[in-house]
Image 1 (cartoon, rainbow, N blue to C red):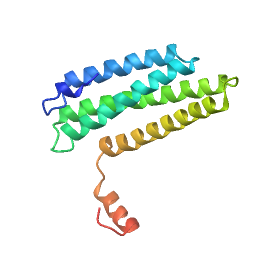
Image 2: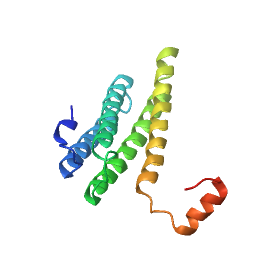
Image 3: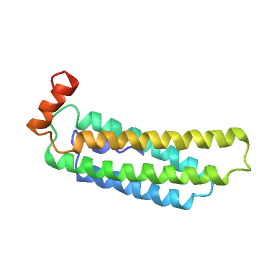
Length: 153
């Protein structure tokens, strides 16, 4: 699945629809796979591919230039859904870990590593989302940051 082939150097509604449809499908797949370590791992691998494509799309279409407001709105929608999916997958993998007491220690360790990776990814997405889509700092906040950080903001 390559969503980048459709970009033509823009981040538009078509891309938003493709990403969101894929995220919704992965959410349904995660819910169906909630008790199956093999199935949930397959969903997590698809999530990783989607996240990699999203990062590549950001670099290709948003970071090289000043994006239009519509592009930022689409970006924000995808970010919100990606955060939701990362949280859901993390909860599903956590559940698989709890019910997989009868698996070998190495298999349980891999499940736990996946769970921890998903949590770090979710936290990273939330942090980046807030950085990209938070309201701009007020002049008073900028002055306070300069005083606290002792660097130009």
